[in-house]
Length: 264
Figure 1 (cartoon, rainbow, N blue to C red):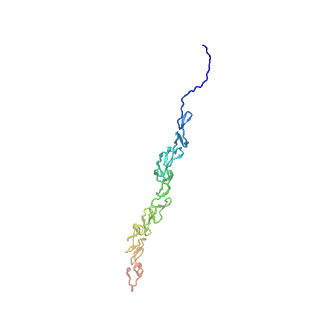
Figure 2: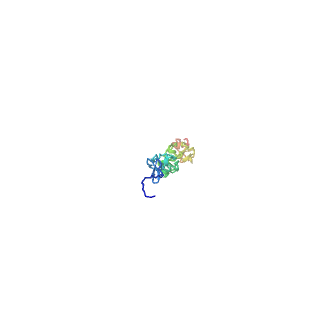
Figure 3: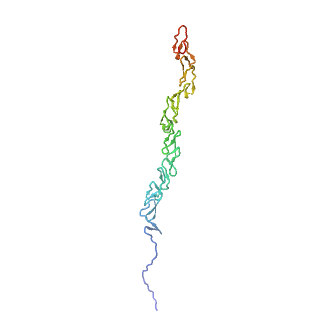
């Protein structure tokens, strides 16, 4: 038996198992990453051709901002804001319009405040309130002007100064209530009644002091004497030789006779 060394050349194919990415994924490093044909503008690709959008964005490729009534990822949350307010597209927080406040913008501004975020302070006077959106002054009854700084003009009173004053004989209305303030000599709800006999002046509060049946002027209190009397208080009889109203008539009695001072 003899031995010799012989050589033979051949090809041997070896096989081993290898992982492969599923359709819709591609290999990145040692990972299979999902493939989105349209690149996700404001989000990330989470499965083949499916984007997960950032809050406030929607659409297949996350390139569309949310409509005003929606917010959040894929704009899937409906906005609950009121009075024309809009949602922050990311957080859903309400952005109130002028004149409103609260979590859902459901409340108007507190009294004396108005405008954006209810931060502007009302400048109105005399008990007026502001319009919660514009700050326009809403005057209390009896006042007018841009800041409600002026009382109603003469002859007007009440809300918006729209009521006409009913006072007569020079009486004036209170600009708020419309109550009449009567001049001297007049009384009643609309100053239509003269003072009763025996009184005169403001509110008919002064007593007449005329004598001998004399009557007071209901305004000034000046005495109007009856026939035969004269003087500031009608306290004097007519001087000898005169008689009658205001002692205006002259006596025509003869032979030393005297006239009766009242009727002559």
